[in-house]
Image: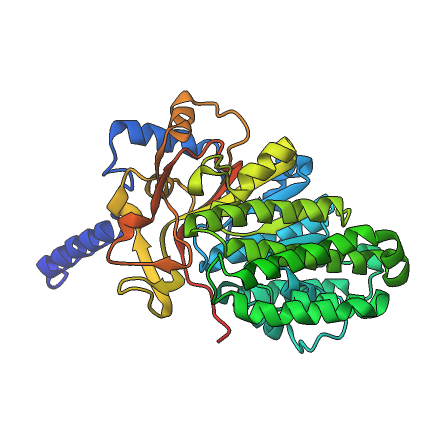
Length: 450
């Protein structure tokens, strides 16, 4: 018997076949817009990059093991960020720190944050009384909006939980190496001097009164100079009375208070120059404060958390002076390891700079607008997230030459203007700038706590 509607069946089969074929159509070639030279760079890159699943700090660490060779040699690991508001950057630093704790003996992390306030945060994670009721409150207390995020809260909570039930020599510590604020340093001085030299408290009270006024005065005002001289006298008293004050107040307490006095001098000095000079001085002082952790606090290994700019090895930066990273690289050589982080496309938290200094919001960039940038070409790699060891020689000269050459690199800080993204690129080579690079193809904003 003849089957009904043979033509219909034929047309149906043909249409179905075309539908299946269209569904199986290959994705667009991600390298189609690249020149032959750039394609060779990407092909060479794909042979050496280390794939990473994501930045989740709770994920197991097996995929980080290939970095052990370079991590093991480092006394100081500088963990950078390409913006101050990228969730993946923050979570990856949290993940790296947890790995450094587990595998490489790190017990200390130090932030680009106020020294005095960070002492309070450190006391919180050690379970001491501070008035900070939670990790969220601790993160929000750190002055910079950049650290008032769920990602930093998650790190602080993990550190506090880690310390619970452990002996003092096994616990983790938190410090700040920045010197832009002075609000918490005076209470630290008062706390210590009450124990060891109550007669000095009147001098501290006088400095507190002067501090409230000097920021509004010109750099040549006599009161400003008097304030600076008073800080120097106080700092010298710590040096002259070290033995007696350590015996009366304890070594660690002495070192914290002495450093508080030093940070007050640094903070005052930042206000006595141009913006350029202040930025350059700040990096020198931050490097000094990292060295304080190593030399005065006798911390064997430390992880640093700051922007790529401060971490990078840039011998000539603001006012033709080196960045913090360049100072540390010169002092520590191979014992200082720089981990930079970049993305290709991303949304991130920043202050809107499109109309002066605006409000804090989520802003975005796609780096295809500067298609000769490191960011754009790295995004053509076969993995959405990866690490690249810049410390070791690359097996392909094409890749070596590209990494050694200067290209644009996206580098936004606290402020970003979406209407002029080209202003936020710096021209640099990657080799020598960082030692390890972590790259994300796409990123999201940090999650603010306010």
